[in-house]
Length: 204
Length: 314
Image 1 (tube, rainbow over the protein chains, first blue to last red):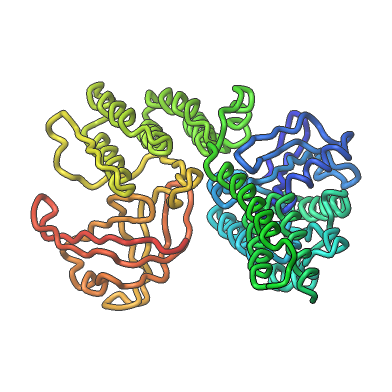
Image 2: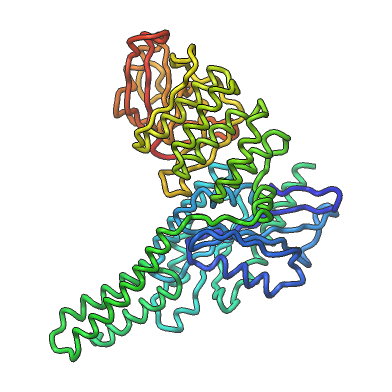
């Protein structure tokens, strides 16, 4: 749940990039940090665990409007995707306002995508959140690997595997090249802002 | 597909997966390439190719070993540790906020700093038992069992906890050690606390999961559960039980003898498909299986039943 900073007249929301290890979550955040410098407030913090990282930094979305006269500041987080960091991943997910699930398009990672999505849904449930209700966007990453002739899942297959029931926006991306990274974030911000607006209206 | 092309494709995929950090997948592709190569007779320099692939596999396996055996979390700077405390402690009240911060440090593997923080919380009555349990968990994660037992002895000697609290902590500590197969005994030197007592209703008790260290993931501390009865006189009703002891995903309940009619329908092996778990700060649903159903033969709870449930899903 977003927090309200009355002094700064800001609503502080949290967006988490979730997904299997090595799927491109960190690459997404690094690209955003590098490309949208003007909107980044403060440093990117990296908490390194072997083979994986938790990253976060604050981001000031522009052009998405205010909520009841308050600016919206967003903290972007990645979770460590490796299986063994389940507890850390769950902690990062706490009080989340919006989610980007970065799925790996590589065929060999098909099962890992599904396991990670299930893990995310379970962790949300443990916090009393419903995966069907939290603003969520799928990003099907590593689409560029098809050009190199490597076996990747089709967007239709990924939608069928992951998004059949959720029916949330899904976007193709090649985070390494930056393709689709901004669009994914924008879509998630849009949904998150919409959800926050309705929460704050209900709360008024 | 031509065999040579197939092998070449597999080797390219192996390289790609390696570059992506997908080491197990990489090894799988190298092995598949080697398997095909071995089955083909007329290949010039086949042994040399196979040796080349074997070298690649060894190199990737070495990377994988380094990953699997590396410390889960290196010590971070004090500034990053402070940030973890700030970013991952969500409670508003003055007592539980620092406790959550310390738990976050432990979850990120910063056990040294977490221990300092937990120890400083032992002086705070509302959170001292929770802090002590998390100190135990830190020692378990660090495998500093003897240090943990020594610290427990100090609590015993200092009179920091009431006899009941101390017994609660002893049972908790011993339970975790037993579960991990560690043959060490946690004892209380003082007299008067040797009989097992039902654990008092938990104080604020946030816990550190053990899963980061690769152990079985533990549940939150559960104070009570509500079981939807599927059999017996209370079929269709949700019956609540207090949890007397918990070790990871195994919980124990004490059921009074007057509930004998119901107990008969909770035999060993009975699946409980709809359980609500109540922890001090969350309620969640899951399922479990009865692993033990014993009538207590001695002591103040004589005649009552001790029921163990293994939580199978949450």
